[in-house]
Image (cartoon, rainbow, N blue to C red; front, side, top):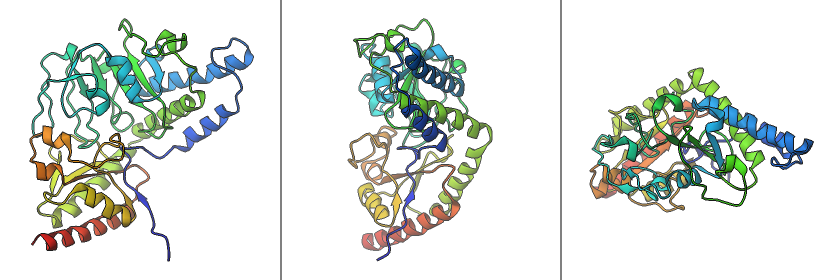
Length: 350
């Protein structure tokens, strides 16, 4: 029996490792020194960390000294938000919701109402729907994890005091992220015991992961400038049209809003997302029901519930997220597989 050909359509969960990141990590792996040591070997390791810091800062529109490397965007959120009592909307990522009060309202189009930016947190783009927010000036923090590398964004222009990002969302390694802060913003270290990261995050830096992050960020910025994501957007829109033309009961969330160019989120009321994800997996397609940070659980979308969709719709939503390496042929095969499963669902429901 021939193995089923696999097609990866879950780039928002994690993007494939870029060759530039792999090369940088392999090179860093051969270094001996601790970046906190002052001898030659330590200085060589420190040089890799600082080069990556400059690469991430340049790609993100920030200054190098503003970048604090962490073990993930989740850790960056904790470092930024612990003890601050800021406000957020229920559509934010779980890593942010763990530290804020859900006081900000969101409408059916995914727009969040922010009355007090200085005491509020807002995502640049939602990981499930792909909806891009209009950022008011003076936000306490923006979650740029999904937007970084996919759409134009500059920290120095957005007006926020802090931002969180992650390497593996733009083709870097898993297990490394960053908190970006404007100078003068107080940061209380949550991990103590050393003076690393300018005294704001103790622990020996993950030199290999940080090197990969820097290389991935630089490559992502180059791709963005080259217009590669415009082609991704075109492919996403073609797929959306193909599905919408046959799946008349399916709701395509955010298609009248500004979205990330790679994200397609759609719900078929009554057809559980868990069933759809499993059916597509068996057919060879990796898709998801939303954020990957729910420990492998498939559940009704709290994002759609917060936007005012009913329970049946929230339980029937799946996400297809693609990237520059995704081909139109792969999307055509996905459309054929999903529409075939949709027809069977319709027949059972009749």
